[in-house]
Length: 252
Length: 260
Image 1: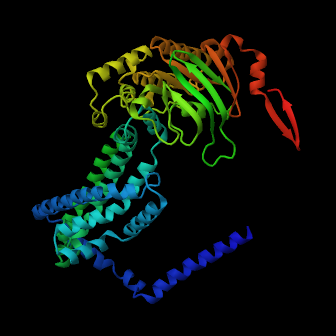
Image 2 (image 1 turned 90 degrees about the vertical axis):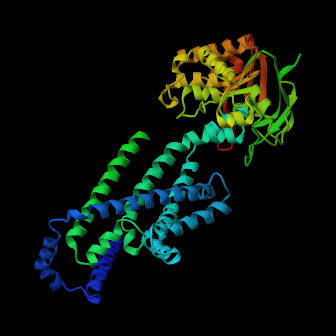
């Protein structure tokens, strides 16, 4: 009990130090936050009412974001099938699945926005780098999910079909796949939802989609237009989630 | 006459195990015969059945099934696998598939490889599967998913899948251990009846001497991987079963024999 009290004290002290250090070293002045009231009010005032004339840009940007998410997810699926097999504990020896899992962990560790910036540098502006970035970033998670789906399959029905005299392809089709399919579908839809959410901001680094307009309007002080785009993004996120909940219910 | 199965002086140890699961076992099963294997848990009943199913590697001795020698180093060819039907203790069905699909899976060893993988059964395959369902009394369950069935119904699906193979030898691993006494009798009645109707030999393991004696022609007693007796069912006596199931208890170095 004593040692637990002690470690609690140290944890508290560490958090306190971190907060104090952040205030002391960065240019964060509490006085500025206090006096920001009128400025904030003015800012919000300039957002209201949202400018409805940008519907065309919103539609164009949303469609591009949707395309980035769809093609990015497709790319991630294609990459995740071989990588998922290579990362599964039951299909390949440790010498293969350990490095494969490590590589996927590395990919997962890089934020999407960073991958997108690198891709913009590599292939130029537009939705193409966004799509490639989503495909790479999403593979880090999706391939791990696929590997877990493969490893979660029960051995007994596979053994039973072996006993029946079914070949390897027939076993894959009728014993392994029916067990994996719902998990794979659920995880892919989940990843698609994340891809769509995350790719909303890709335009900020020039990788295509609706984020481009948010950045343009904020930088040019057209806050009423930025407000319209922000509202559109909120509506899209809610719609995606509702769609996903409905889909997931089907695969339960 | 061709024997359904002949095991001659076979020993086998599971990989990594200290003690052998089967030790110098010899047994013959005549065509069309119904044989029950009795024995305590860990006696080697499942191992013996898996051996005949061609799923074990690295055993010593000679095994022939339906007149063909098994190779201890290689899986038997597909047609041979299909000739031996195996009913698993935990059913080993594909839970999310329908009853009909699961029974049709029993045909996979009889179809050409590509047809099997593409999942396009012939009309004959479908007919055989439907007959198997009807014989097991579950024709009305054909379109239900297996995960919605009870234990007794699953056991019938597992038997139907085995029948769809058109096996000449049926191996059943404790087919009634998960069922209540009434259903246990139903299932064994069904199993021995369909086997007889098809002229197939059947070998099943069990923990229940009374049921074994009632449904088998012959009883084989297996204990610690060795055969204790092989007798006509009528000769099964209380003394025999007691000897088969007695427990050896060892207390501080002194070996005692307690009757279970």
